[in-house]
Image (cartoon, rainbow, N blue to C red; front, side, top):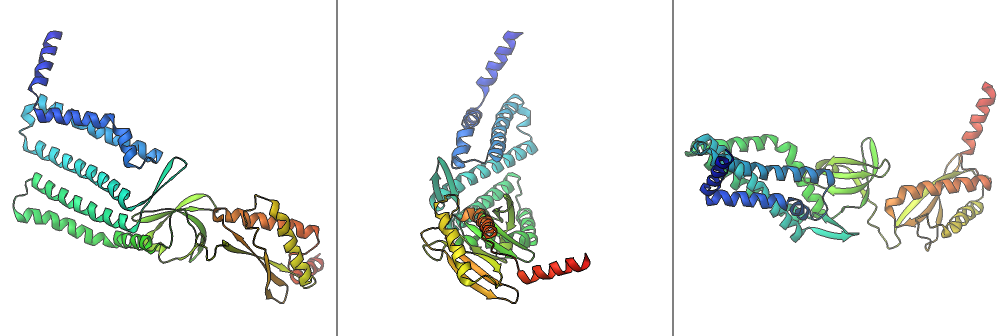
Amino acid sequence: MHEDIIIKTAEFFTEMSLLSYFVVVLNLFLVLVSKPLLRFLNHGKPDAPLFKTKLRVFSAINVFFIGLVFYLEWSPEYTSSTWVTKCISVVVIVYLSHLVTVVYQFWIRNKFAIIKETDDQITVRDTYRSRVWSIIGTIFIYLISLVAIIQALEFENLLQAGGVLGLIGVMLALTQASWAPDIISGLIILNSGFTNEDDVIQIKGPGFDMLVLVYKVKMFHTELLNLTNNHRVMIKNSKIRDLECHNLSRFASAKGLRECLTFNIGYDTTPTTAISFFESVFAELQNNSDIKIEHQHPVEVRVLDTGNDAVRWGVFYYTKDVKQILKTRHTLNEILLRRSLEERIDLSTPKLMKVDAEISQTTG
């Protein structure tokens, strides 16, 4: 019995066609090199969960093709079946078109995108040219694949083929309002050069004001990292163009970003006392490396407003570590508050505090 199985197996491999051998060997090779191949196509920096999913899907498809070849060789009666041949042809065309698209986009990014190597990591940042050529090439590949699928399904007359293309055209026309503005806005954002990945921007709109780090500008949306809550935010590209954006990473001078802290101080504190207080605090911070400010540029203390209740003072300083801007603000506010209590400089609004005290005495 074992001898019969060995004989039948030997006859099976002997009778296999050269094309079947080629497909089996090619897919076995792709399975063996799937991990380094996908890592190379992802520029050596794959996203762990997404990379594992891609690896499993890629290996499963190649194993599927190997099993399909063996099955068709073992059951040749299915090879002549029209619907089986059509289904296999469509699957092969879709798989090859996707593979060609991945390789093409990899080549385009290597040619036009900005690739940076830092700390054994490779960061790829799309540019306007890489995004445009990627979209044009992908559309061209998918159109060729669509024509090949129509031919594989044997839509011989022009009416059938035109019906398929017309249906796809109608679907694109009906849904263009949901994807076209985001693609165009993404291209405009990349072409403007206003912001790049890792830039800190402040976006303002109706009902919100966020300080974020640009993580990645994608085709339909932009991923941002909220510096306040340390989580990712996804905003449509068309929505970003409707917002007020301030790029804090693009300095207007070589000194860095000019920041301002405001304080309300009563009229009983003289301007000389207030100015010397702020200048002395910032002078003591020059030896503090945790405070990311440019100590070589002196602090600027200015009167912003002389209101009815208090004088509003502005303390201007420079910083280049924009990613730590919130930590710098909070730390400086804490230090200035502690020192004001030690030197008995009241940062509250005196008149309002007095009114609150009188109301408390009256109600008490």
